Image (cartoon, rainbow, N blue to C red; front, side, top):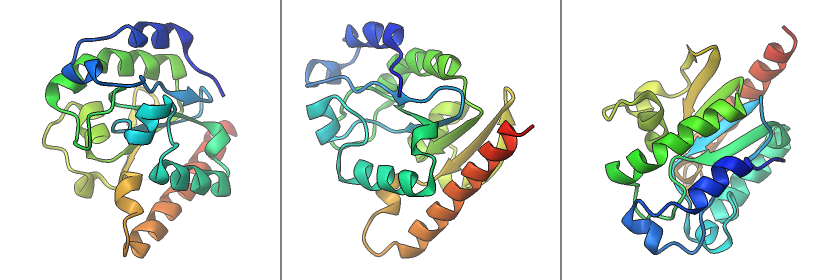
Length: 186
């Protein structure tokens, strides 16, 4: 697993948003370059406390699922914003301030596949404030030579009574794994 030190040093000194003054830690991306990039929304409470991604309840479930499927160690993980927005979606100002870091990190990670997890990641990546997960779900697009797809955010998938969503989520992650295998064999 790799951390992008240059970007992280710049981000660690960022105080452009109000939420940056209340954060405990910045939560930077990490993982393996040149394969799959998962873009999530924002750090949660536990991530803010620890400064690490995917350590809250939902993150642990997501990580376990990715390990079971066999793509956890082939992926890079990043949030649209790096600071905890206190149990609410990030606002337009916060996203705008973090967007240059996200763009730079996408370039440096140089993934073959980008998986947008949830509405915030979807709307931010495509620059479309009206984009909805429900109309983009599981669709595969090509952008800058990369495969881009959209899935529900893990916090939505792992809610109680969403067994069909979990099964669909697993199927999509397996398809992403197959796409990576095909891409690497070209």
